[in-house]
Image 1 (cartoon, rainbow, N blue to C red):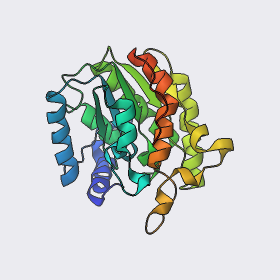
Image 2 (tube, helix red, strand yellow; image 1 turned 120 degrees about the horizontal axis):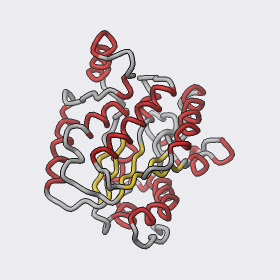
Image 3 (cartoon, rainbow, N blue to C red; image 1 turned 135 degrees about the horizontal axis):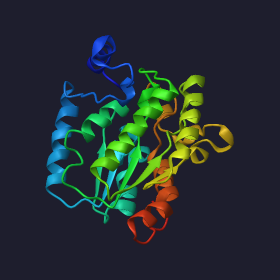
Length: 256
């Protein structure tokens, strides 16, 4: 969820700091006025300075959730992370609530400086479709900006771009997600591989609510975030492609 102060910052850009040719989705916007976000940013800067990084994850809460541990079982993400990525020198740069503009700011402010990972996994865009309610064309421009910035700063890194995951927030959000992913599918090439995981979470085009933990919250919310088990299935789905990008052996499916 994006906080009130971030929305006010976006509003100020709408009133004059943005440019007509660049949508806000592709404009770097900081969330340093949010204490936990500021602390996580500086913690991640320290983390990448102190270790080898072969694999980097760039995203929002769905990516940050890899750091969560249970109980309950639906939020116990760490075992699957350890299974697939524990020996791959992976760093998690997922920040809850980030839209493309916030990730773009982080990329331009040190979070991928001084590292040379073999692969980067990008999953971003879900929050563009929430309170911000940006159109598909803006969201695509924002995702393109994130990918281009990643490639510019990490020219030897292979990028695995994941499609925006299906959700059940509104008909508009679902239609916009599909439009974004159809456009991104044409972006593969030049060191970027695109994978659309929609069939995993919405077989036959219908969202499988059992794969999301939001309905389990109090009060319940519309499906948006995969459960730990569903995220392990997502990791298994991308594993053959990721292993090829990393040049190592595919991990077997995770068995909890």
